[in-house]
Image 1 (cartoon, rainbow, N blue to C red):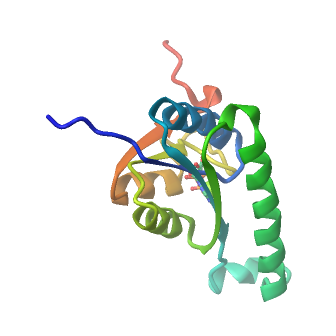
Image 2: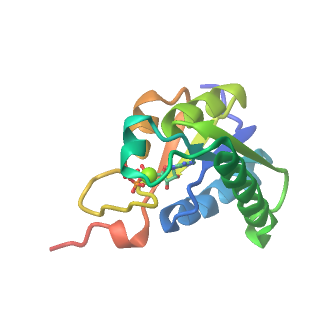
Length: 155
Ligand SMILES: Nc1ncnc2c1ncn2[C@@H]1O[C@H](COP(=O)(O)OP(=O)(O)OP(=O)(O)O)[C@@H](O)[C@H]1O
Ligand SMILES: [Mg+2]
């Protein structure tokens, strides 16, 4: 069997606790194999019908601000001492699972690392909806990292 060499490790983060846990695993993978660690955050596009529940439909300026905040947050994450080595940050805009899959394709990710849950963190569900769709549709291996709060306790 040919040995797999990880060249590109892709961490998708929504800056949640589970994604932070995932970042530590992604960094370990990348440093063990001398891979580039790609950090991606997707600024979520609100669908037209979703905007009815918002006070104001997000304007292009709002999205620009969200993107620039995300860039700063990714740079902070990249500066984190644990994430040494070759790190690249990517901010995208759209539907999170679609853009995560697209980024995995474009960056030729060998492994995609995600949290089991994210910002909305409904612990009763097995996976968050982004995590579930990413697992179903990813073009590469996926490592799903559980936050300690979501770990199964033996009865
Ligand atoms: N906007 C995003 N950009 C990048 N990665 C994301 C984004 N949203 C989620 N992820 C990744 O997916 C993981 C799981 O998040 P997910 O959104 O599935 O859970 P949730 O927010 O708890 O549930 P839901 O969004 O279905 O209400 C996160 O830990 C993160 O790794
Ligand atoms: Mg979510």
